[in-house]
Length: 152
Image (cartoon, rainbow, N blue to C red; front, side, top):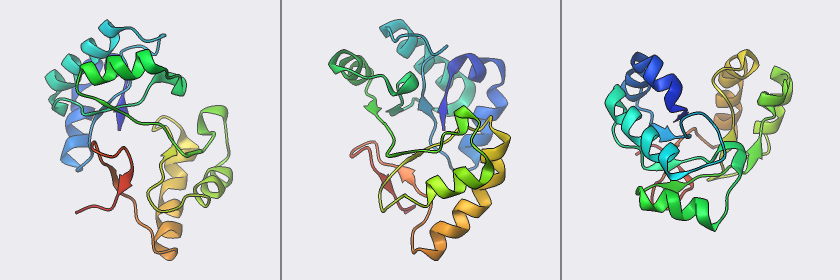
């Protein structure tokens, strides 16, 4: 889960619930602006304070990256993560469309989805079932490689 720290600060119990569910908590900036060092640093501190530990993964807002962004992330010990498949849930995609986008995933790939989308939440069980039927599983993202890996 890549958390915007403004929400982690407002509701730290959600961060603790993510950790309790076995999720890794990543940095997604504080407020989704164009990135500056203070945004990354403030998010690291806020998520740690909320009980999420110190993030090791970072997803730049809107996927906007550059050598400067990667350098800022590395300065904070973060591995930048982007996605291979965009579910378009942020753009109002239907549950069926989200499930269909997940069907394009191959081993080790990452799909962009958001926990605030009701259609995404409805799609998750169908996605998990479809992945299982294809011999794939949901996993976690390795901070070393930036790729999805099966739970160990």
